[in-house]
Length: 474
Image 1 (cartoon, rainbow, N blue to C red):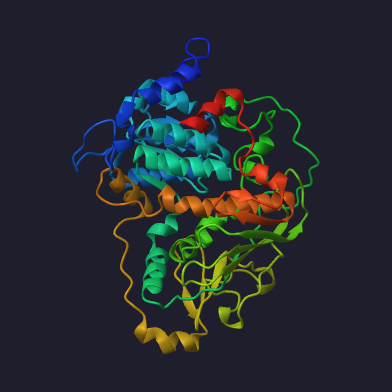
Image 2: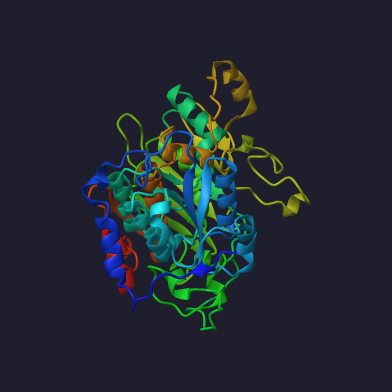
């Protein structure tokens, strides 16, 4: 097995020199890289040389899915805990690929051999990896949400445009049936004049039942873990196992809660094809168990979007929490229907599955998450309009192949940062409303929360530790 490389230490090379030198190496040509990879010219038959950051948990699935397309060669593996149990499956698949615990060391050592990077690490660490990769001309596949703060998303959108790289956020439904159906139905006027959307995610979350009054106590850092690299741009915290391996989702300092985790799978197509953009108001209508450290036990959030040209204003209401169930149309179906509830177990124990209801002019649509298609309710109305529904095209490529083909200049990414960014910023505003438990007035033109100073400061996120500040100026 290849040895794990940590890369140059602070004593041997200043990180400031590394970052500024790496970006300077692109020189003036960085803004005209085009759709093909910057590191080398490539014909359509070449495979994309892929570096994978985050290879356990969700990252493992991304590595396998990208590799299974047959369009990529994995050239580097990076994970802050390379000795952890959850990394072993990927390490066994690629035993001879160079391994790193720190993505900065990876780019320093073999940056010229990398065309694209997958980023499947905790939410708060997406930003520095993606920013450095884009500044070096590398294409980026980044898990959802794009980043941890409103400002980070803004900078990532700007970098994608500046460096002309292919970018894809990992909301896989954007390459599945719901994406094409939603677009076709909007274009054909089937979905029109939407004024109200309900989105719900009522499954149990890691923080449900947690009671905390502060941060977790210090524990010894596992020998296999690079804790400093794991923290990246976050404020310093003492290590505790309650922060890692998915438990980071519970904490405002590291995750984005149920909204950040599932919003991109539930409201993404409505957000894009209804041109929702950014809301002017976000209200914490209901928060159960509000806590300054972890996410609420249940939330109801109202996002109010203004009129867009001829399109009317839209109110999107988000529900999370196991017992914070949304109002649904009577015709939405009894528990057991695919779009409304899990089908197994006694009815009293069935949980409402993640989904959405879209109220348009003359028609109401019910759908699930990811790529699940919409259905028109009631069934009598669905039968009435069935003959007039347009044919929906098939997807030419799954989400992973779409990204890699875009790296090769053969397709365009369906969820690039330019499209995914405003969606993620909308969700970031929702997280701020959860954090301050308030109704926020937001000005999309100035990018400011105008009625709450603390909330407005949270748009920028936590100031990065000194050695990580440069990622904000790449």
